Length: 621
Figure 1 (cartoon, rainbow, N blue to C red):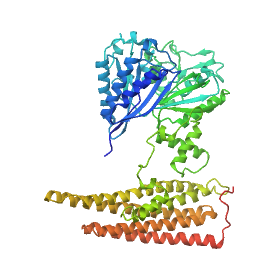
Figure 2 (figure 1 turned 180 degrees about the vertical axis):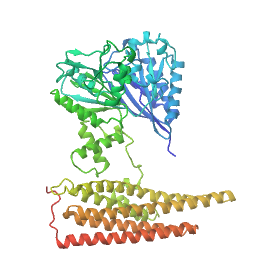
Figure 3 (figure 1 turned 135 degrees about the vertical axis):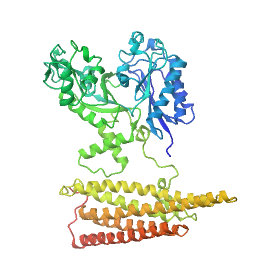
Figure 4 (figure 1 turned 90 degrees about the horizontal axis):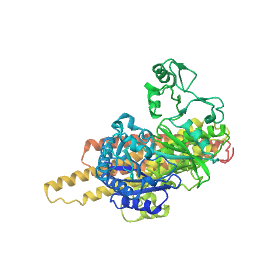
């Protein structure tokens, strides 16, 4: 069962006074079971984004304590900054990471909101997935008019907060709290100091879009001489030349022809669809789940497009960046790079790396770390500051410090050689299979992108990717095999003084033994797949690397044979005859098929070496 882990990313309206920031974050550090991941202050925005994770109760305590400390230290009557804001703690989102449902996280956010409203007398609005009114899902809607608009907004019934008093709190303002998808705070850097140029591009990107203009809109749209308005019996479409005779017909047209909800677009832009006459026509932006503004960052002496990607699975960093590059080029502007504020999910950066490898016609079947580095370089994430993958990527796959696969080769071999029974043949077999998979990936990648390989690349690219997956699975099995055996040894040490203790020990021993069978059997199956891939890479890969494909098959067969031996020897201590017979039959069949496939690979390799398909050096185009 997964541990329950929640991420919290509060944004505080202070980015200049380090003493204040440190006092706020110290409240988070004090809480057991909570880890402070990142503190990202912005001087010109006068705002700090803090990221921490932990178990739900710890995160709940840390969030409230940090909000309380911010309310003590930050005076909104004196606050000025480039970023939109409405409170000392402007927004406090929660993100379920693992082990708990969205509904559980929503309940957690409501509990924090109730505490903030009741104990601190701060108006709190629930937003995103926690919202209790549809219009409050959008943070931009809640924050309209910012801090300065709160005194009048709080007098209106429709602006009654979900928690806390409907009274203006001059010092702390108001706070939005809720559950959302992982938000990527992403800034794109431009080679200009003109904020209006950055804003012009931002309006084309963001889901909220912009007002429709005509006349002199190229290359800078904001220079359009006329802003079109909705008029009685004349309702222009923001996406084409169609003019409807009623708002109802325009709404239907936008849905059927352009696949967007005009009512939603108008409301986000503070326009009542029933009273739209005289208001500017709205043109939707390019990307869903994308918020963007332009601002100047004197520290960098350039303008930025500040972007919030509220669901990276719908709109990714790379797609926004490529569109920005296109829009910037039309305006004679160059994108110099970009930056991530706070953390970025592993999956998001991985997909970006794969996207650019595909654009370059390169194989995606390379180590995960290489793919992440391609993403960092392609996005230009080190343009204005360093980007450390180990510190900035949330969910980065990591081995445990004491894992066998973390050892140096010499240390691992020495560990195998000692008198302890583990690591033993099962771990060595898994490592052999991993080496075979790695060789397969190498042979495939040496051919991809080379002249004359165009006809086989569609087979070699997925082969390289699958080889990487098998390599990682088999490396995990190095430790899984040892861990399974150690669990069995631990079961042997359990007491058996009473009938109940004896029953529990027998069950633990049986479970340990069956796991000690399951792990090497999985290793054997994965090694078989490595042998199958070796035939493909030997057949389609670069002839100069055919010997490496042969080595891959032979070492993978050794891994398979070793894994099968580990299955069979562990069966001797299991009294379940039906289970044992099934395992024996499975292993015999698997070994026979593997030997047959190995012979096919060996014959193909020998033929290519002896008959001499003229080798092509691996580095030759």
